[in-house]
Length: 486
Image (cartoon, rainbow, N blue to C red; front, side, top):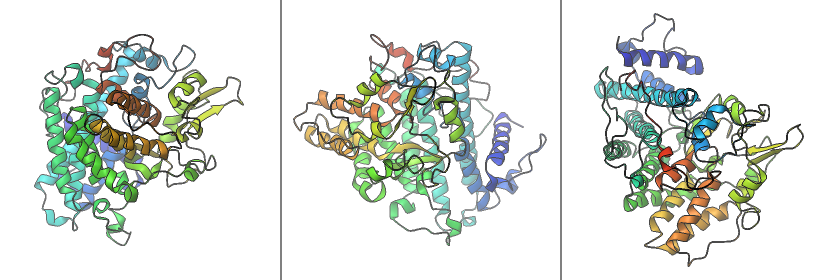
């Protein structure tokens, strides 16, 4: 049995434990093997394999913590770290001590789990390549394959953003990460940063073509009467618009502003009907009923059963010595509360200030899961949201159409309760400065601010005195990177 197959069996076993709907896949014992022919002999096997990939992306080593509100936000300066708060491994990582065992164990897990997901995506694609497509109900084959290709691109891109040297730092032709497209026991060598981007965009192009008939794109209303509602809840799947949004994100990372602008504006053009701005009533609701993750704005996100526990581990008042916190001076700076941000929803409704405890503290509450939280927005982790498309479009237009760029930024600001607009006469440099501010305000607990800083090769990071050593934006590859055949 090759190493990839062992990984997949272990993943399937874990998925069985996590998802009751998947319990019929296989009886899990130490000696059990999944028989591919039987498992992929019908459409349901493919559906459940894909579902298992989404479930496991929510592990703490991936989007359930480290790629979002964990290490990504630590390195992006979202938290105020000291010896009295934040775990030692996060403090060491913040200091750039990546070879320390505690940090290395963390980054190794991030690498290993992400490639584990990629291996299982590749297994699914391999089986899709050889299956009789008549096994699938109308449209399902293209949707499943399109999602798989989109996920392969998405997973690789975040590995690249962590472990590769940014284009802006001269990394285009430097070896970066392996772009693994096969499910095999062979080693895939590292590709350059530019080669990885090319492979990502190729997968996304094919995914977009396959997802043309995605219900979220066509507007078709899906109910449980059709295939038990399989194509419902498309924002929790890597849907057509997630593909287009990732094309915008990747092309901006690559410095291709024209190629980034087109998909960003496509999403903006449909946002009123498909990704509407959160209302103040929704975020100003009671503690239990508050939609802190702005669900209406999600382009792609994950449903995570364990998000409450992951949150408690590092963002809850019960863990003072390891809680990742902020403070009042940071809030004033980040949300500009003394000037334009006094009524900013992101400050007013998403910051948790606990004063009724022995050691009062302030921390980000976007992912807070109170008992009784409504199912409509409980256990949801946003991974791509519509405001990012406005920021991307604004950045692409800051030189050629600065007035339109300002309009895009002001649209987001107005949706957040900021009544003071940026002047239409703002320069490209001023526009870029406002975009940076917006990423800092908009994406606590989502991990995206770090990648903004890295993409722009910023020498200034919140909480860092003096010039930030930009080499720290690149996580070192695991010493045992070949352990699982990569």
